[in-house]
Length: 499
Image 1 (cartoon, one colour):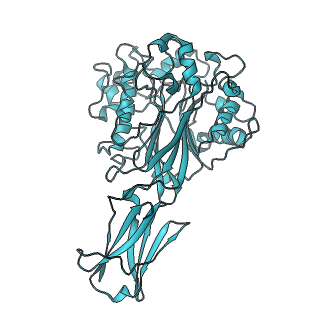
Image 2 (cartoon, helix red, strand yellow; image 1 turned 90 degrees about the horizontal axis):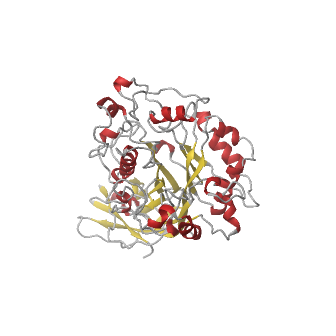
Image 3 (cartoon, rainbow, N blue to C red; image 1 turned 45 degrees about the vertical axis):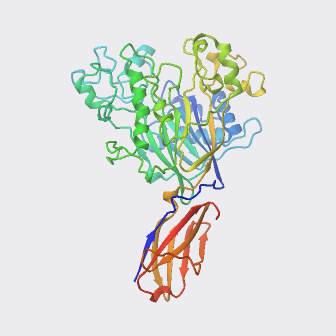
């Protein structure tokens, strides 16, 4: 008889594995006033805004990127991916200004709550702006004011379903079957929520969804056994409301959803009805929370320092501070609200009007486990840089002429082994006179197999040879002649880095 025990050396020293990924977030403002316009604009290679967004991406060259404010038509899967695929084919895969094209074989377009009507009569809820009427249908020919009334009564503000959604492009495989979406999670189901007291009726609270767009966990597999969770969202801005601060409060709780998710909160339920958060052994899950969070850690109108719920989380590495020369330059020049800012303008990621000021609202927040940070930055050239013009639609370098009022934020992450994932699917079998152990391994990990007859005394002598298949990351260890042995136990000791 033989038995197998998987043992992970928790006291192992963590060293960097030779896998580096550049992750980025960019609110690119590829949103349009009608559902059909973005696919039409991207059907050619001549849209100036799309050209400049693509050129910025070709210069930064992220391996994985989240694009916020990218319209996604939810009516059918072909339409859902149409704009995303056209932007890839006609802009990312086409050289901009002589740069090397980009190729992202793996893509994801998020279904969004924006522009989705509740379908509820006013007596049952759905008057989310409390103006006395529920507007449940939209028209492309309506006035801006009429479209706003419709958008205010939707689950997330939008003039049509899917406006302001988001897409993800990845050079690495997306584990599609493992994606979790939280679009349908109700605000009232978040314990301790900060929903404005007395503002929404009980009927409205029963239907109100927390996510203004969507919250999606997208597992990215860099190599077999080397996965990180891309936690993508775009919380509503803490503005466009009144003293009840309904949008500021919603923004706070949208950010809190990720706080609860990485803490493995049992009350969370996804769109498939599966409960629980990001299951984590000893807090050792690899994740990156990213997106236009519409929340600055020090400045702006956030409710109760919303983004600091994540930045101060014990599992999040908030140490890196992506910066740019353009942000440092433009902060003092804008004046207005910037004159009272506490945060360093070099870390700003958005160029708003003087009344709002420049803010740090776009974030890339990696987990402490599984990553070390090699570098980071914000694509915001100084005005003396020839690339400064990329930020504007034409030679008029004004705030209103930007291709987007946000800047791309990137971070270079070196994958380090995650102790709890070093030995996956450990199994043993007799093969003739031998005992063969197999398990999924990770790069950057040194393994040895130890034997014991009593679970007290362990030895790795004579050494059991281990062969790792580089293509599959499957490790195989063969103990010759042990097939007839009785009462033998095995454990696999994983050490991070070389011995």
